[in-house]
Length: 470
Image 1 (spheres, helix red, strand yellow):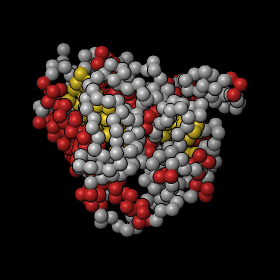
Image 2 (cartoon, helix red, strand yellow):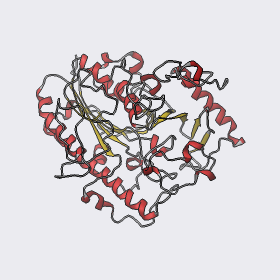
Image 3 (cartoon, helix red, strand yellow):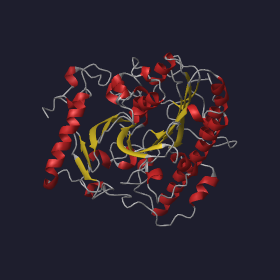
Image 4 (tube, helix red, strand yellow):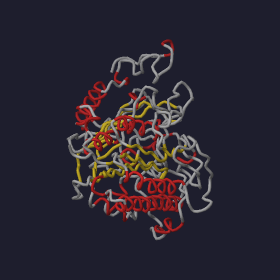
């Protein structure tokens, strides 16, 4: 029997795909570009939902948000109090531990108060959910408090994400000395705002042209036939209407500086893998839960929409048995990453046959499917499908969207009502709903509601309204 491989999963928060996939992008990422020369790059990688908690729930369970129950980032608001995994859900981490893997988890959990510590995985250094008070010195240790205190400024030069990587590097000699295969997960905060970044990395972008802004920066939705949900901001930081081009440029400098800082941290971690003699039997994956608008379409952060800036993600997997730096254009999803790693690690007995077929190297998918249910206690019911050329978005309560990504790569012109694309829209709608029904998506039902009394929708039957057949 071949030796099972180790797994190192490096998850960033809110990292844009274009920093690594557009050749003329200004982002300076020497370590990640070197990594790409030996890794498989999946150029059509998407998150199933562009929101932290639901996306992470999908990563660790392999399920979609309507299946695992973590529909929102927050808990206890309105009748949508679902910012955590449903208690019955079992993560891939638990399944790997049961199969003999040594599990170590460092960083952002963001899946509710039942953490991995409560799930029997004690080799953890956990932080609190969103780390919004952040990028400061924080005392986090293995087996320590579930929620450590955080401060708003860096006090001694060792900030939160840097400390997480330091912990991972310090853990590697212990993992290397064990006969057990290991799975080490490192979840960073960055480059999610606030962008508290060492000056040396911000200065890498001081020569950006003064007029360097995206063509779809501060687009006016009211003039573009966009859904109403995109016309309101849900955090003050999302609003770009007051910003000048210079404001955007400074923000971009800090965002890309954050990416460059993480690139340096990732480089240190990969070097430590090599220094500990783990190169030949360790899979390494680099990815993100979702992207960042960074001023596109008038938004920072993310929101209830499926623009490329937030749904498309970086995805690179280095398998020591395949180091030719290939790029794959099949469509892959964030929530299929663990089946991919487990399959490549020769730990396939952890997977069902259906899960094994979801591996990036086995899948030949030519569509990505997208969903969005809630944000900060507000409900948004959107489902989408992204093909090689088109993106179609459907909602029972808002207008549809259809974008021709070849003619309009920045998604400025909604062509859902264009009669010349009526057949395209019809075909995409059918494919989307076939998928929704196959996945048991409650929005594919006749009333567009979750089952009464379920953990997705806790309302009484008298509060539900039927919107008629599709």
